[in-house]
Image (tube, rainbow, N blue to C red):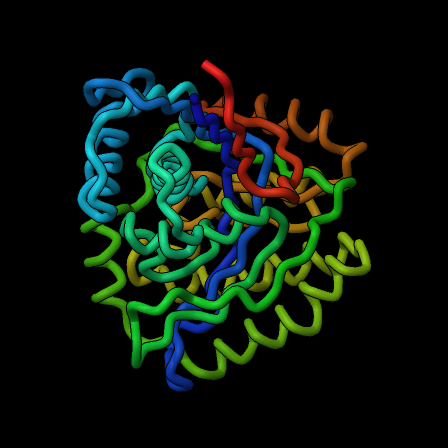
Length: 318
C-alpha cells in the first residue's frame, strides 16, 4: 500500500493578541490556498529511504515520527512537491503533517491531526497551519493558554472562504523571513503589545473581517485585513525594522493597493505578500505585478484561490 498526501499552502493574515493579559497569547488568522503544495508518497519497505525534494528536512521529520510513536524506520518516502521554505507560506507545518499523516496511515498509528502536530513540534504559537491542513478555509484560533503552553490552541472559528475571490501572491527576491531559532529570539525580544491595539484587532476581526467573509463583502474584508496588517506590522517593526519585512515589501504592497487589491499584506515574516481581488481582476493584476517585480528585484507571482477542504489523503495500491 502507498499513502498519498497533498497539502494546501497557507497565508498567515495576522495575530490577534500579543499582550497576553487574559491568559492567552497569539491567536492566529489564516486561510488555506490551493498552491503551492507539499505532495508526499510513502510506502513500507525493508529499509528507510527518502527521495525527491527537501530530503534532509523530510528525513529529520520522519525520524522524529519514528521516535515519538516507537515504530520501525522501514519506509520509503518520496517528496514529489514542496512549498518553498521560510517564505511565509506555511511549508514547515504542511511538510511535517504530510509526512506524519502518511506514516500514521502506514503504521496504523491512531492519533488526531492536533496530536500529530504537537508530536512533530508544530503549533508553538498558533494552530492556524494545522487547522488549514485538516479543514482548509479561513480559520481563527483562540491562542496559546499561557498557564498550559503545551495545550493545542483551540480552533474557535472556521468559515468557507469565498470561491469567487482570489489572492495575488508575490514572493520578491529578497531575504527570506525569520524561522526557527531566529524567530524564537525575535519573539523573546518583543515588548508586549498595548492592550488598546489588541482591542482594535479584536474589534476589526469580530465585527468587520468575519462578517465580511460570511456576506462575501470583499470591500469590508479588504479594509479590515489591511488595518489588521498595519497594526500587527507596526508591532513587529521592533523585530523587522518597519511595518513590513523590507522597504521592497512595503512598496510592493502599496503597488497591490494601487492596482485595485481590496486588501493587502505580508504573510508571516514574509517575504510572501498578497493582495485580495475579485476573480475577474486576477489575470490583469497578475500581469501587472509580474511586470512590476521584473523591473525591480524580480521574484515569483501567482494567483491562488482558497483551499476549503484541507489536505487530500489517499491510499493507493502499489
